Length: 236
Image (cartoon, rainbow, N blue to C red; front, side, top):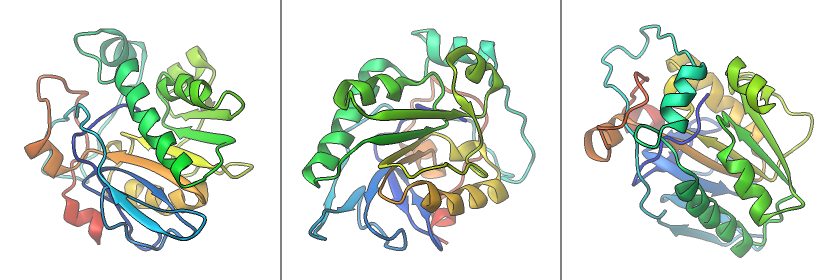
């Protein structure tokens, strides 16, 4: 699972218990059956809902696919991580942009008076969020979960998959960044249904959509083939 596929206009949508919308969003509230009205929708302790826009972030593209159900094989091995995380010319994420994003997310949660003691990063990659969580909330517990056997061995993450992961305890914030586009339709549907179980309080969710590919992508930097779905699919 991946971390760091960024867009300049990302969002969230709910389907049944949860669906995604164009791009990336921060969601907070008492029930995951509420449809966010904008890029960020949250309810504070007093139940007030606010909608704001996320700052512009570099969005990294993937290759367009017509058949969303065609099987793909993703190799999240050492070569993958060298290319997409360690090489400054080809990496899909960098510490500076992750720090800016984390500042935004945690500032918004602070505004809503949401305490942050436990953070789950599902599809954590190299763990860029770990440094930011401990920088902003030094006493918080960060849990990184990753599908890649290589990343788990190298960085010490817990191995798991978004479709089936079940935590032993609740988290105050769940980060799911650039993961769902690596799942076929059935897997993505299952993963989306699992997200409410993982994120009872707050969720930062980011995904590459077909509209992002057409409008927002930096096509010179890509992480390979993924399942590009239109916004309408996530609205069903």
